[in-house]
Amino acid sequence: MAAFATSCAQVAASRPRIATSQNLSRCIIRNLGNGIKIASSAKLKSSSHISSTMSLSQSFLSTTTKAKATVLKAMSTSSDGPVSGLPIDLRGKRAFIAGIADDNGYGWAIAKSLAAAGAEILVGTWVPALNIFESSLRRGKFDKSRVLPDGSLMEISKVYPLDAVYDSPEDVPEDVKANKRYAGSSNWTVKEAAECVKQDFGTIDILVHSLANGPEVSKPLLETSRKGYLAAVSASSYSFVSLLKHFIPIMNPGGATVSLTYIASERIIPGYGGGMSSAKAALESDTKVLAFEAGRKHKVRVNTISAGPLGSRAAKAIGFIDMMIDYSLENAPLQKELTAEEVGNAAAFLASPLASAITGAVLYVDNGLNAMGVSVDSPIFKDLNIPKDVKS
Image (cartoon, rainbow, N blue to C red; front, side, top):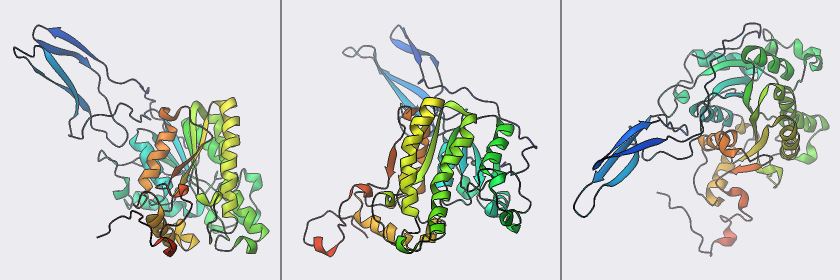
């Protein structure tokens, strides 16, 4: 059952940490006359969205021409096919995902993928959206979208109030403190949230930044005010610096952080204004610098995912997200709609030991749209024989 935000003085019981095994199942095969016997077999669990236990089955043919021929096959008890030799296993790991306020964005999808891989989930939610989010969880509104591949529900150990625009209580203006949307909530600045997580759970292994806001995103850059520009950079890029600064002291060595960026950081996306393109460019630049600093000093990896367009509630703020999705469908190398789950799975990979040598990287998860130099749906290319997806 999900736990909800309270004062950090009310300490949540920490779950026992499970030692993570990176080794594949080992079988000791003993030849016994004309047959074989499996002496021991460790259970192997595929945590990349398959939680059914795996068993080993054997078959052998013994004839006059084929003596003692043995075939070992790894079979799933749920007939899901052969087990992967490189499962994403995050059991015993704890993740803090900042920026989840509903169940249809990339942050939620990342949380689900991490949970499916075995990680414990903590969430930081924007204070004005906190009551609605917690109420929706309690009432079961999100139960359908909480379902994991094995049929269980994603559990959220605790939800923390968080406004990543403010680093510490001293930074909060008086008018914000008096705002009724913040009434009843405490310990919601980045510093306080990190302190509460430390008091409640001790340490974390994974930090996810799924935050962005540009109050003037609908304005062209030439019409963006200084205040609007700086607000976009503050909420969308410096917030990641602040999160890492305050959470890295409680991150275990070998930990990983993941943020979300967008192709507007390096290409022109008309309509994506208000300084948001600049904020994403800053986020990607900071990813490289932070990878060096966090890696050298704390042995923590820092990466970002450049995700394609998704029709989430947050994305609708830019006003033309549906057009961007249609554009991607027509022009990306892979003509299919990008799903939030695909971004979540990429984040789980980056947070896992499988990506242990990857840091300072921008990983594109956009059906390959970033690689395109022209729009192939333009009338100018109508006479070229460009393969198109056949739509019914």
